[in-house]
Image (cartoon, rainbow, N blue to C red; front, side, top):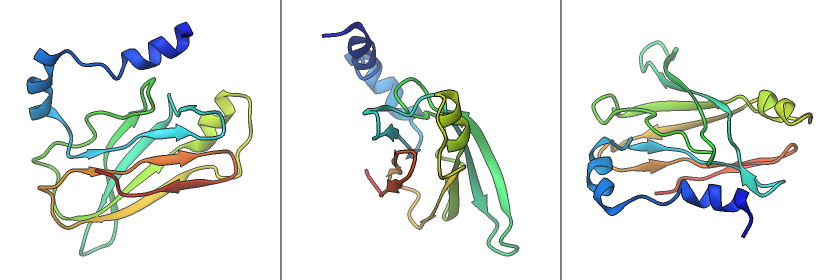
Length: 139
């Protein structure tokens, strides 16, 4: 097995004694960016999370993060801040592809979704290539 692949697998492994402490601090909203064109995680991609004001329809920035080596973005929102409403994840795909010396048809991807029950866990992955993307609600 290559050293690169071993490094990727290392990020998925969690010691049993850390599992309980991590469960209480996990974000109820998660994402995972996968570069499907190259079969690798979409690492080092800027992500902005917004919530829409129900009365004015204006977007309020909640947090800006960068995906980690595994294409994930831990700690997006706390359980206390996660309330019903319309949210938007804005992924800076142009910067991501440019960092790899490639151009992209989509300069950014925005995923808009509604949270009705904030007691549930929501996973919103982004499957990405230079000329297409898809997403779905995972768990």
